[in-house]
Image (cartoon, rainbow, N blue to C red; front, side):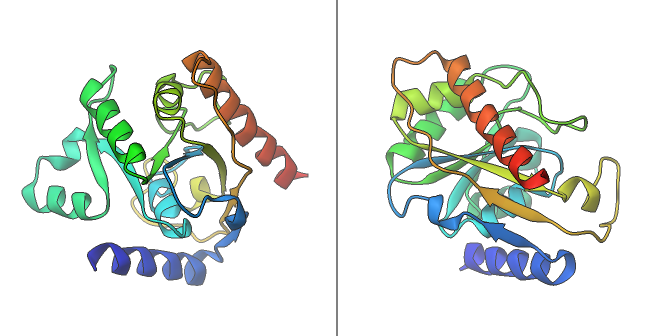
Length: 198
């Protein structure tokens, strides 16, 4: 119930306040585990991914957010689980694989952290590891405008337009190098970005 209310509220607030538009919903699988790979330019991005995807999805969130028991409980209700930043977190990767094999959706940001100067050319290999271990398809997504609404250092929202575009599924071969998978996901995100900018 908490997840549904949070998802519904976030979606309609973004529609009303920022004119949120969503395209490519049909590209999301109706069942089975999948990875939703998006660019990351704002702290608003996880909320956008969770509220615009029709299916329930899970997230990695920095472990510092789970120190407070109330905040931790709320994040778990939303499908988040902790990850240690700065190094490969084996427990977080195992949890990602467990959720994907359980048929859940998983949001991953291949760039690893927010980028403020365009899309990164050096995505992290974690998405490749998880994708090849599970065989889950990757759905690339491009978020446009969230960096204007909640830019770095901002304490309040700015008013602007925001859009989310879901691209076509990417099938991953289990023998593909992890970094190649990460680059493939970023290339597709970049392709969507170019198509909507023209």
